[in-house]
Structure formats: structure tokens, C-alpha cells
Image (cartoon, rainbow, N blue to C red; front, side, top):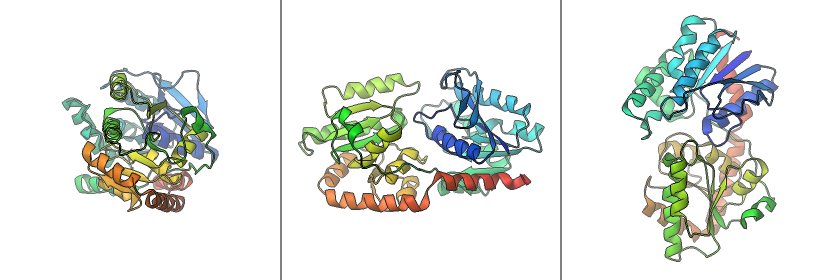
Length: 374
């Protein structure tokens, strides 16, 4: 099959979950012999990079502002796709899916699929018009496509209740594995099980500032050992002010470490030797970083949201969303129960090995593409 992906910022993935999802399934589909094309934005992916792990990158411009970057690029990609003989056009995200009606109208033989990653209009960063467009995109994704994929059962329920669409649930995945090695950690003077870990984009919605404040309060009240650290992995994307803010509130705190974006063996080691993986976000999207952490036996502490609890299924701990106080108290509680935390980590690793893999996700996605007999 000839398959096109529209909606991701670009590749290789830096921190974003959608980008990671597309990269993992695109390279596996290419390895299976499919022709795969991924549309990328010029402000995210170097123009010199035209191919990655067996699939092609198609560079198109965008209007690089907060409200127009995604929608302008998705429009251009959708128009470009009309002049290509794709068997499948797969939109990722409800915003980009706003334009899925174009190939449906002009390319009737092409399979048009949309993956419902998140109800983006809940983000505070969007203005009223942007939220209106995102809601329209959600409607298009769930009514005007040949099939809708939801990354969790909660989003599938949204599709069913609001649009009478029976979405196929295909989750995010993880093939990252536990690493016994610790050599990469020496650059930050980290020791096994002596740090908390946060991994993700440094944007306000991820709630990293709540985690920093909770950690500072533990230090101020001597409820954490002097050499215990908080490690923050990731970088911003068009959010330099927020990154500056995080660094400002961390000034003078030697035990708060910003590593920037990490991948490969270094990231595996960071996951594998963390005492806890803490996800402070109140976002309802399923975090790939959470799945990767669990694959490496990192015990998760996440916001008390049904989407998170669906993933951890009792194999982890929760705190009240957006509450520094509850996050601080849960951290203090768990830091006093190291053996219990370790046992939970082993359980979540076993669960991940059994339930989530990118190969399985690719197989299920390709089955969705068969809707018109490809």
C-alpha cells in the first residue's frame, strides 16, 4: 500500500506523543514493504532530511504562529495529497482532521482514516475560534472519514456518544526496554533509584511547574534526602517563556536537573533507574512517555484521571490533578516505602511486556486500512 500521514509536526520525534506514534508505525510499515510518506513542517524538520528509516518525508511550509501553524500545514498537506495516488491518507489529531473531507470528496477510492489522540480544545492555550475549529475537526474525524481510531476507550466513548461512530481502539505503545546499565547517568551525577523523573514537552499543560514546587517543598521541610534529585527531560516547542519560568523557579536548587531532550540508550537508562516516574499533566491524552517508563519498570505517579488509570490499572499511584499539596504528600508517602514502590515497578513492566507493543499496533492499524479491500 501507499500510505500518507498528515498532522504530525515532523520527524524524527523530539518529545511530542503524536510524532513518536507516527514515527514508530511509519518505520514498521515501511519495513513490511509499504510505501510510506510523512508530511513534515519546515520549522520542525530540517529540509535536508528527506528520508528516515525507510519512509519518505514531504516538506511543506506553514504559517509559524501558535494558532495557524498546524492548520495551515494540514491544509497544504491535504491539497498536496489530492495529486498523489495514495491508497491511504491517515490524519493524526482532530485539528488536522478538519481537512479530511478534501480527500473524501475528491479521492473516493482512497481510504481516509483519522486517529483521535486528544480533545485538544480543552487546552487553555487556544482562543475561542481555534477551539471552534478543533471541535469541527473532531466532528469530521468521527463522521466524514472511512474509519476513526481512538487511542483509548474514553475517546472511543466520546466518538460513540457524540457522533454514533464505533471507533477502533488502538493505543499508543512502547518497545523501549529496561536497561541495567547506568554509565549514561554519570553526566548528571545520578544514582540508581535516587531521583524522580519527568519526561515530556516543556509546555504548561504538562504541569512540570507543579512537580517542581512539590519537590521544593519536600526539600524545604527535609522530607527528602539531600542527594535525591528531580530530573526533567524534554524541551519546549514555541514555549520559551514557559521553559524560562521553569528554570527561574528552580534557581538555586542543585538537585533539580534539566537534561534537555534525550533518546536511545540514555533515555532507557533514565527510565530504568528512576525511583518514580511522575506525570503531573492534567491532560487526558495517553502519554507515550508513561508507557515507556512502565516498560522500564519505573513506578508511575500520575494525575488522577480515568485515562491514566486505564493505563496503570492499579499498577501505580495517583494524586489530585493540579494540586501541589497532594502531589507533595504522595511523594513523601512513597519515598518512605521504597520496597513497595519497587514491587509495583516490576508488576507494571510485566504488564507492558504483555499488552503493548508497536508491532501489535501496526498490525491493528493495517487491518483498519483494509476497509476498502487494500
